[in-house]
Image (tube, rainbow, N blue to C red; front, top):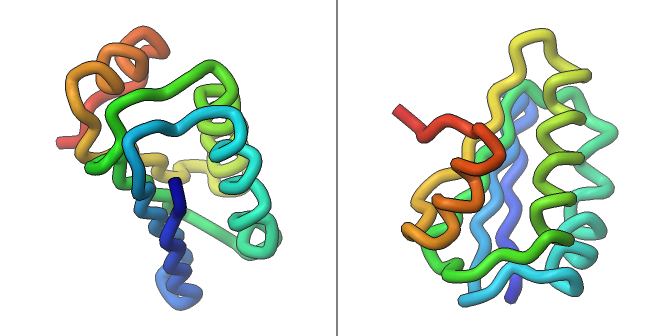
Length: 102
């Protein structure tokens, strides 16, 4: 799995597209490394596109929780969006109580 990262400093948005069928521990660690340089920037929105992901494990969930915490702490009303999740990944996200995108 790989991730394409796009940061828009003017709008303080970070977009991440996850590519691959599984988002697991090694991928979560790689994603943290990929995002390390961006997370020092002021960010009001993080959007992750899960369109290609079919499976997610607890390490990946932990990474998502950390990212969500980071955006919530940094911006009073920071947006954290998990988009295009397939049903199996959506079930995991629903268990976390994360709302579906509008």
